[in-house]
Image 1 (cartoon, rainbow, N blue to C red):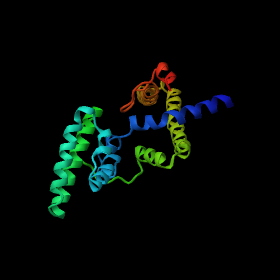
Image 2 (image 1 turned 90 degrees about the vertical axis):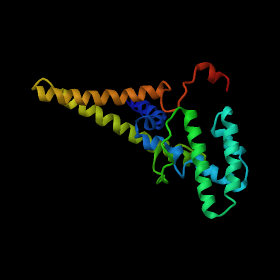
Image 3 (image 1 turned 60 degrees about the vertical axis):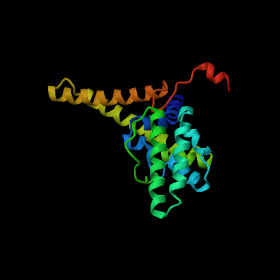
Image 4 (image 1 turned 90 degrees about the horizontal axis):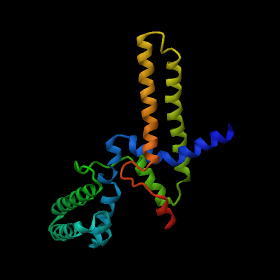
Length: 208
């Protein structure tokens, strides 16, 4: 039983980040289209230094020309006055994020306001900056296990009374669907079907 419990916690730690990205609302998934997201933050720095090269990694090779041309235009306009600089910068941010999002196969709905830094993706960025995932992994493992256990326990309890009446049966079905769909989300992540994920084959691991 102890080994089973430890195995469950390990599974939760590995899958929760991708699971959270898969299941949270779209506003959290669209981290790269916020004013404090990594794309815009790096774009600000690039404009200040006048160097577009660091930004090219955010787009596909065939889109480099469009980004470079937009960057040159932005540098020229932002020299006019502070108001022009603000407008030119936003034009470039929107161009870069739009093309980046298109490359991910994701919709672009404009630049969002600055986030609070509490989303899973924001915390994932912070972990990369710190060079450690340990603290985040432990925290999210606890939340993952809690979410699965709550849905399981509710389904189990309603199942005991499912035959008592049609109403009770429907409550069980609702709990059952919620429980199984949640676990299906986990399965999709494990299979590499989460947001922007690419499934890794055994051969790809051998190349490392």
